[in-house]
Length: 183
Image 1 (cartoon, rainbow, N blue to C red):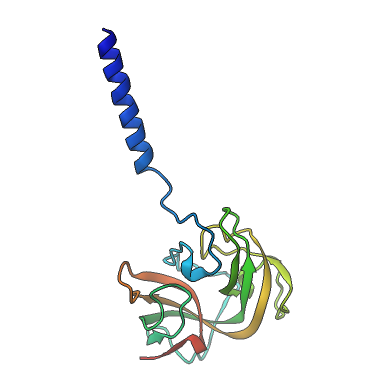
Image 2: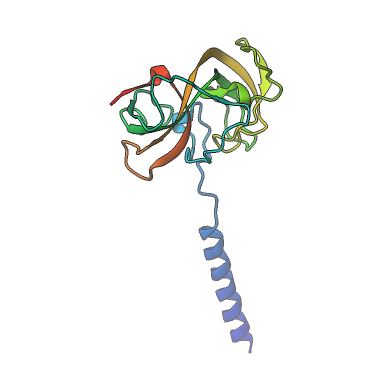
């Protein structure tokens, strides 16, 4: 009887350890200082803020094929993309500390006017402290941030296949006109 209890105990322990290993957190836990190195899943909802206005005459129209010329994330630069949205707004590069305990993110591009709590409609100045209401990345929503740079511009939402391979990214938010070129 004792040997059965010991065997059952050992089997339960092995099962528990196996289950714990399978359900562990697969995110990167090391501190990073920029978006390219953080664990980001840029495939997000196509939902946009209600007060965000479509650009009436964008340089790149919805459905256009473009080449991404920036590297917000590994595999972006040189990737072919399709424009799925073009919007007239103010875009901000920001620095913030994620709410999930990850290290500080420097110069995150881009957060738009409509993703800042009580931002109003005027361009905010660099150095302004704001609260984020966007979730481009885990730990972003609700975080306090400082504006590094600001510019009125057209921002684009795109779908692309990373040059590094892997899963296609849908509804990446945001790219500016100078970060893409016609294919």
